[in-house]
Every structure is written in structure tokens, then in C-alpha cells.
Amino acid sequence: MFNLHQHPFRRRRFLPAALLATGALLLNASSAQAAPARTQVEAFKPLKARLPKTCKGMIQGMSGLCLLASTSPRARNTFMIRPVMAGPGSTPPQAVALNTFQSLAPGQYRLYSASGLDALHELTVTLQQGVPTVIKTGTVKFNADAKAHQLQHYQSEGGIDGRGCQAEIIRGGVRAVRAVLPGNYQVTAVDRAAAKSPQPPRCLTTGVTFNVLAGEGVSGSLRAATNQEPPASNTYSHPNGVSSLASISRFMADVPRLAILPRWKSSRGVHNPDAQAHPALALYSTGTRVFMVPFTWRGKKRECGLSLAKAGLPSHVLLTDCQFRSRKLTHFRVQPGSYYTVNNRHGKNAIEGNFINNPIVVSGVNFTLQGGR
Image (cartoon, rainbow, N blue to C red):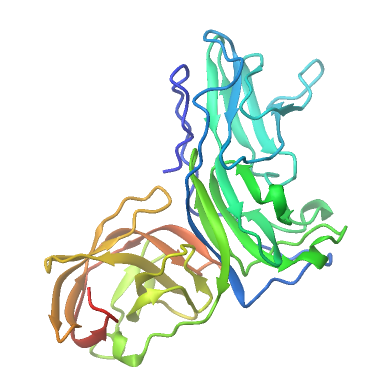
């Protein structure tokens, strides 16, 4: 999943970060904050981040930390590190210089951004005697536009101890390329003027959730969030009009209806975090919940749709047994299995692995694919 790549000197294994927060939903603090830009959302494409192979001053056999960040584009951030067990005589929190080896005594530490972004989401690092530990950050770039960006962890909550949201306002310029700890983040465009408010930010729920992997980068640009509703000709329900087609994951959410969006960008407030539009299988659950499974078409009729490999999740065969007539899809089978999805079941955009518990056979339809396979 999320691999924090370690230097060969120190091949320590980190536990993978969860693809989905299991905690509470984002809560709005009472403090004033910029209203989210509801007509535009961020969309990301891969960014080639070039990181040094090692830190300056690192010597094999020395205990300490090497925190690597992209030098092209140059990613900036101020990280802090502190012992897990603080007490009399313990090392006070200290700044970590990017791409420069920092000698530290063996022990357990917590690594975090000084901006407050990582409050309650600090990374635990174990340093061993005589072994340099290398951690790669991820890179997030926001292109110049008329908006500022509020960046927060997907799991962030507002109003804790009156401190507002654990978030960072990025206003552009050189600060628009940030080194971050790998994980799931949410970004919302906010007005530049209002973003300068001295009040603590409140957590927002209308943004786009995206993933950043260690040593890799993403570049975001704003685009219109125009709602896409599939036409009736591209939707399918159980033939008896009542029964569920399938259920989703452990919480057994029923799926009474499905559809295919040929070029999904935004539908019912569920936003594609990718700048490239993808076809998506939309699984509509009870209430307003919807699970989008983006995929790619392939020429084989037996295995005609592959889910995307995203956020550390592998690609799987999603659609099989496809039949076409006059460039329209008339029959297909949805395979049970675990897939990368974007959904709104927590009242905000989430990216996670979801399991379709049983197969769905769709027949007697004429789904328009807008350009075919």
C-alpha cells in the first residue's frame, strides 16, 4: 500500500497507512474561514519528482535520520521530530533539514510538519543503533491560479481543543510545491483574501481526496465541477425493480442500481481526483451514497474492463463477457472482488479499496460508450 521507502542501510518495514479513516467525519469549527469554491475542484496528474539518492553528510554505521524531498521541482516544508516518550532529559523537538543527514540517538520518534498539518497524524519512526534511516516524502504541486488551497489530511477533524482544523493554507508561489508525509489528503480551493484570516481554519468537506506515495509526486490544477448524471439508457436496475444487484464490502451496502459514465469527472459530488477523465462504473447504494469504480477498456471480450491501479491498490479485471452491437454495450458481467473506488459514504470524498461481494450480470441494455472501447 503506502510504502515509505527505506535506504538500503536500513530496510525497516513500516505498517501501511490505511486507505480509509475509520474515525469520525470532518466537523466544522465555529471560527470564520474562507468558503469553499463550490464550482471548481482540484484534479491531479502525475508529477516526476526527483529526489537525491542519499542525504548530505550521511555515513554508514551512524544512527540518525535522512528525510528526502524532491529537488526538481524543489519541494519545501519544515518538519519537526520529537521523542515518543518525552520527559526530563529527553531531546526537545527539533527541526529536520531536508536532504541533510541528522544524527539522532536510537529510539522512537514522531515526525510531523511544523505547519500543524500533521497534528494527530504524526509518523512514528524507530531509529536503531548504527543504522541510518532514510524516509522519502511525497511531493504535491499546486499550479498558479486565482485561488488558494486548503490542504488537510483526509482524517482531519475540526474544533479539537479550540485549535480549528489540522490544515495548511497554501497561497501559491514557491510554497505551492510541498513536501508531505505519504498518505491520503483532501484539498479545497478557497478565496485568497479570506485565506489570510488570522482565525484558525475549519475543516472542509467539499474538496477532492487524493493520495501521495513516498518518493512520488502529483500536480494539481482547478477544473469545473460540473455534475454528470448518466442518462436512463446507461443505467441498469434489477429486472424485478426491487431487489439489490449486489452489496459492497463489510458494511453490506445494497446496490439497487448501476450505470456507466463514459468520461467521469464529477457526479453527485464525487470527484475524480485524476486530471484524466476515466470511464467509471457507478454503483448507487441507498440514500445518496455512490461508489465510483474507474476503469479502462481493453479489446478482449472475455476481460473487457480493468480497474485502475491507484493509491497502492493493484488493477483487477472488473468487467467480463462484454457484448457490443453498433458500438453500444449490450451485455457484461461485473466481477466480484476488491477495487479502487471513490465514494461519498462518509459524507465527503473518500478513496479506498471496496469489495463487490457478488457478481452482477447485466443484459438487455444499450449503453453508450461515446467512442466505443
